[in-house]
Length: 373
Image 1 (cartoon, one colour):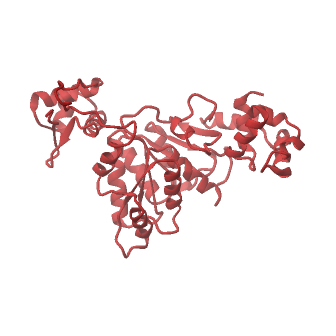
Image 2: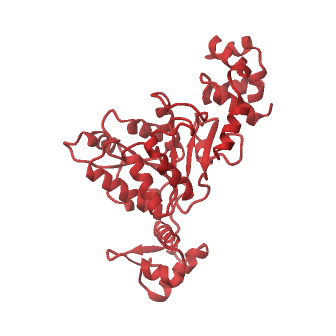
């Protein structure tokens, strides 16, 4: 058995988990060697025990990898293991990275901007729903992949807004892809996939969601993201668990402030008190990312005594910059018409240029090139 198949089998063993699987692989030399090891040797590894050792050694009786892979193929689901080159690099960085991802759709690889996780209460106020929709749509238009959990409330609002804006949405489930939960959101999951996003899970196809799987799902939402935005959350909300994961993983945490008397605001206001970045608009998120390692904005300015640094622009960016150099100032509609770019591409390009401080936006929703001085 190869490493890929061994990872799928180990992922189907309910008592193993990513951290334990990696510990065992370091002892036995590979994931496939774990499955061939005698149960006594497995049980002798610190923290494993007889019950887990028995489940692993009896994997042929307890798991059916052929049936699992056949079900995934029939459902149009790709099984991506941590040993595969297509496994998301961001997610591989976390200490308990999933052994396996079941993916329906297409995971975002390269994008004009960072990936943003958005989570929040299942029972948002009108204000919370409005903010989630506005911020998610702005991220989608900017070309930022948006990650959430397909739950009722803020999750679904964020997914819907991104899809409507022509962006890329990724929904992370707390159960297998053959058990999409809630069932009401099956049409939404379908739209996410049809518009270039993905619905994913670390759990075997027919695993039903439960109280244990949802917190596990949350670490993937934050792990796939460069930053996590929380929009309304009570003090006992699972969104705060996701924020904790994000902090542990070294991600930025953002929060939309709420009214002091609203129960849904207690959690987000607490996050802000503890240092989360306060967000009133998408500009607040963009400006925070400017100063993150590896995401420093390109500038049009000069170093002391130097000529202006040359810009590295792709084809779409060059077309937008050319329009602004000629016109001086243009609306988004004028830029779309002049460049001939699809509206979604033009808006995403503008957002990317704005993030890099190459383009500035005036209050009248017009755009111009930033000063080179």
